[in-house]
Amino acid sequence: MINELGMHARPAAKIAQIAMEGAGIIWLSNGSFEVDASSIIDILTLGAVKGSQISIQTEFDEDRELAEQIKAFFDIGFGELNNE
Image 1 (cartoon, rainbow, N blue to C red):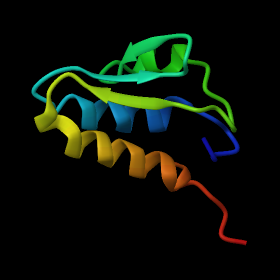
Image 2 (image 1 turned 90 degrees about the vertical axis):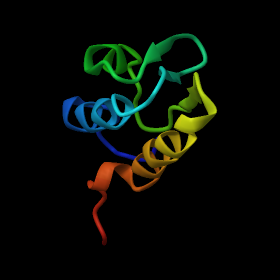
Image 3 (image 1 turned 90 degrees about the horizontal axis):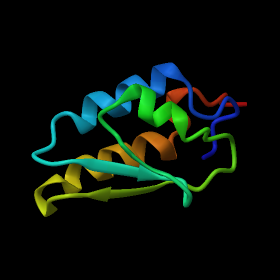
Image 4 (image 1 turned 60 degrees about the vertical axis):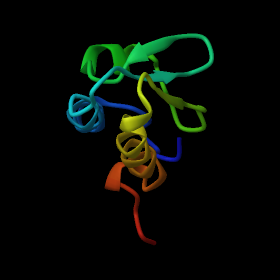
């Protein structure tokens, strides 16, 4: 995770919104815990800070595009990076 603030409510809500579009469950994992990505509270319980490694898995192959959208959201620092 590259965002200075780590995971917080706004990006968790956006991730949950994307995950709710899936046909099945999309999971996020920090290596110790696996949570349902459609739940803001579950996402926040990962305690993901800057530098955390988060993996994304889908229940169904048809949800891989949604997983890619979530990954892209992580990759851009949730759209909150300073362009200095």
